[in-house]
Amino acid sequence: HKLMEKKNQPLQFDDDDDDEVVLFGTWSSSRCTRVEIALKQKGIPYRYVEVDLQNKGELFLSYNPVHKAVPVLVHNGKPIAESLIILEYIDEFWSDRGPKLLPEDPYQRAQVRFWSNFHDDKMIPATFKMVLTGGKEEEVEKAVKEFDELLTVFEQGIQRDLPAAFGPHRSDDGEAMGFLEIVVGINVCNYAAIEEAIAGMIDEAKHPAFASWVNAITEKPLMKELLPRHDQLVAKIKGMLASMP
Image 1: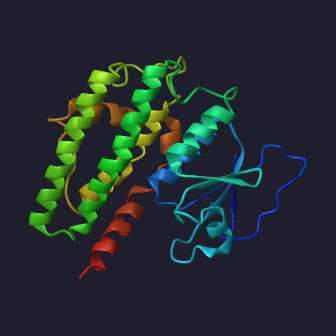
Image 2: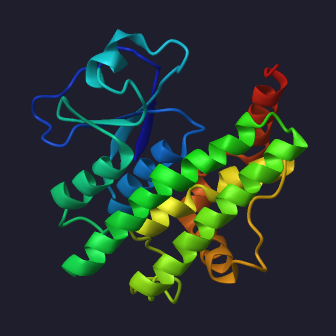
């Protein structure tokens, strides 16, 4: 279902195709990979355009002139930006395709949105802080402590607001992933790469429910297929560290 395109090449949309889907992304971005997983899980054919973040090009910038960031989904020539918004769009537009990403119950749906936003607004920036420490021991300790505090809030919040999330999966086939699983589970590859390049971020003994949950998610077939290679992520992080003063 995924057709690779050369980065930033002009796209031609077929007037006879009412479901032309193109994803602009970059290989190392978990936000881009989560969109790919949603598309593949729904069985939606798409083309993929790798964006050079150092030279984004006029085509990509014309699709996301505000944030100028990946991912961007272009559906029939119309761009949608921001990964969480894209996931909701996919779930709503192709509501008759594949498993639902968001739960049917309005309260549960609101809680999934809340904790997905918490993850992206709080936990992902705390993850990046680990890299920005440059590997300096004192700064690493501060960053690990900050992330651990946020993870405690997240884990306790999920157990309170979405108690079924950490239990057996709700889908009949046992392989499909929901919205929150896709959003959070993708980041496991970053945690593992940071652990090898800098230091461990997750104390599994302290956070057994979260650790068991995300470890199970990474065993899903689509996760295994689409997660970035561990060695490439480690090399990217080490390269960033080496470039710091």
